[in-house]
Every structure is written in structure tokens, then in C-alpha cells.
Length: 259
Image (tube, rainbow, N blue to C red; front, side, top):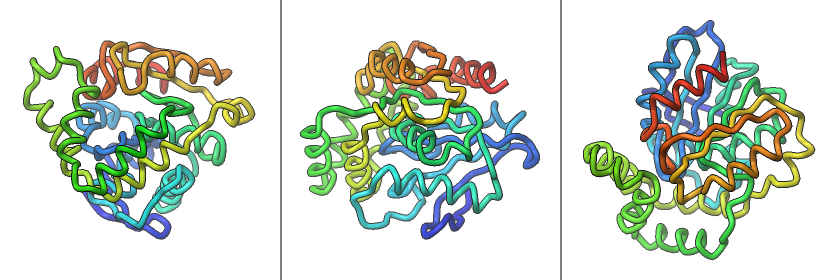
């Protein structure tokens, strides 16, 4: 891992694969870090220059004062691309980073090739729920949040069969910087791309839903795919963290879509 300047911030970044290959950026969900891609990145690095990073307010990246907007987080992706000399890239965003991908589709489409939006939505309803999370994070209750959230991120069967991965994911949530978590909750609370996506330049898109996802139920992914004229919908046997729970199938979908 290495910390590098990207615009005004310093981000924690890992890059794998041949530098001359097509670039592929991987964005993680709220409360996690770049390690959620550990089962995906090596497989994709065989043919792509794979860049994964901790979003602002997460992991080893800077935690500037909040609240944040998706323009802030999306702007960090553009700044990271500039710092790496990447004019264009494929982008894979899961959950929070899927919302960031939608921001990029609307505001920086010229920087994108193909885009994958996994376990995400064009709008995350329920502002009261987001505000409750913000209060809990600011109030020092990340452990309580982690115990609740991880139940929605992984199915009961996967948690029972993979206790080490279950503990690892819960540990990521527990360790998430509280102020960064709260600031990103505000960005998701305020996100709404339902109208903007219909006017955005068309891009080949893959929308992945988890069949057992309680955080972003399949209906939200179906609506997102329906708003994108060049989108294909894929269903995986997983809950919210499909890149962990169904890693092999996730990789297969990426390889087929990205060619």
C-alpha cells in the first residue's frame, strides 16, 4: 500500500497489474476499505491495471471535516486518475462507490469506459435512518453499528460457513473512522440520480444485484438498470457484499463484461 496525493487529499492506494494495460478502478462500500477487493483484484490484475483505494474518511486515507457530498468523493476519483496519469478507466463501484460511479456518469463521463454498479441504487430512501447512523457514529457507537450492518452484508449461511471472513468484515466496520463514516452517510442520504441518469451520456454498464441483499434490495438495482439505456442486469447468490460472498461469480461477470 502507498499513500499518494490526489487533489487536496492524501489517499491510501494499491495498484496491481501491468501499467500499460487498461485501467480498472475498484471502489468500496461505506464503512469498509480497499481490502474488500482482495479476492477480486488479483484475478483482474492479469489483464488490467487495477487501482483500488480507501475513500476519503476511510482506512488509511485522509479524514477531512464533513459532511461530504458525492461530488467530493467523486472528485477524489477524478483527482486520483489525474495523479496516476489515467485519461480514462473502467470503474467498479459497490454500494456507496456505486453511487460515486453514478456521479461520474453524470459529471465526468469522458473519464469512463465501462462501468459496473454493484449492490447500489440511484436513490437511498429513508433520511431518518441515515441521520440515526450519523448520530450513532458521532456518539461512539461504531461497534453497535458494525454488529447490525454486517448482518445485512453477508447471508446467515455464508457467515456460518466462513467465520473468519465474517469477523474480518465486522472488524472493518468497527475500525471505520467515525467522523468519516458519518460524513459519508450524509452524502448517501442526499444522493438522488433518478432524473440525472436519464440525461447522462450513455455508457456500457453492468448492474449487479445480490439476490439476498437487504441493504439495497434487488428492486433498487432493477430500477437502476432500467434507467440506463446500455445496462445489463446480473443477479448473484449473495447479500450486500457480493464481491466477498460470491467472489468467483463476481470476477466472472467482470471478465465477461470488460472483455
